Length: 271
Length: 295
Image (cartoon, rainbow over all chains, first blue to last red; front, side):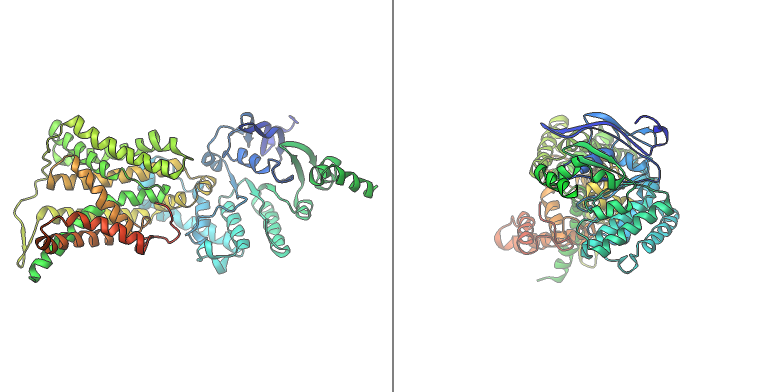
């Protein structure tokens, strides 16, 4: 798949990652096109989160390359990749505890706040912070409306329910106006209604903010209804890729999820 | 008991306490950004005063040049500590990192007198020796100026910490992964915290050096600073201000009132008693966040 790569949002080539003797990712290659919602599925331990960590710079692959909007980001530190227009959420929630919902979302604007011209700029930032603050606050308030977080905007994040915490984390990621949004199990532990909310926010983010989305998700009903394409991983290998319904009904995928014997029975029952 | 004497002891104690607190600010700053207890703070203050002395005496720079130079140099040293030492410790158990800061304390404590000579150095800020009279109370001018300077610098740190730079440091201390994901340079934030810690310690070292001379014993400020940081709550800068005054006043009253009764030596017990009592009764200090568990 080398054709059309010039316009790809994310191009991963031959990604190889091992932890000691454990090969977590075995030569993965894939592309994500602008405006796509790309699902990453697979059983536990198949390497989904490792792959996301490679893309966002938290892990460094032993081999292979990652390019985001055509720029090679393989060796970049996570904060540089964030500055490239990539925002992410975490599987186990990584909110700034002890801060309010509002402050958490405001920190999502960090990449637009022009810090980084040296230590002194950061040191004396408060001298001229007020000017920029207003514009950022406006952007954040819009997001709070969009994500329906008005009631809890001034609550400390640690006291609000888990479902809302995940929503705040998504809002923080969106606050960066990302061109590529990476979601690691945004709906884990949610009930049907909460899942529908999040699905709606993800679709709206694509429509209204032109965001491309890479998401890890276990809920197959969500994956099949909102993802344009999926890639299925098993033990660090790409075992299927394509339209969601087709990819997840491939025999190798069923086998990865259910085991060999159960898969035979499943195929038998389907036939 | 003479009320004038108690007043004098209390005021002097409060001023001295503020000068201790300026050392403690650095411990809190480092704890807030990286959850590491900075046991090198006393020796960093001592090093700062040696550096100021070296600029002023060895190189003959006037004070208004020597002091800023020392502050900048030590701010840089804070950066170097992060880059050369702490960055290699990322991912190590917290006890290892604490031991490294303690190792730096011991290293600097031996290194500075070894390099500049063990004799006590004079660092004269030109503060008149004659005390100031407040009614019948005698107030030492060096403590008065030192205490006020310290209070101003601590308030300045509080203002800075309520700004964006402070929010970034708080974010880093809350969650490094999340900080990276929103584009924060985590190492840079930690380096700035160390730079500020070294800068404030240097200011304290210069003030103390001017009152008692510059030698290795300045590093003993660590004990007082630890008592203040723990009493104030390890992650609260305003806590340092109040705790500093409390520790200073307690020490001063103990010295002035209890010493004559028991024959002296109570001064140094106060700080250690405060550390013990805080940890036993209220481990997160006066203003600290309660979920803090490791020191």
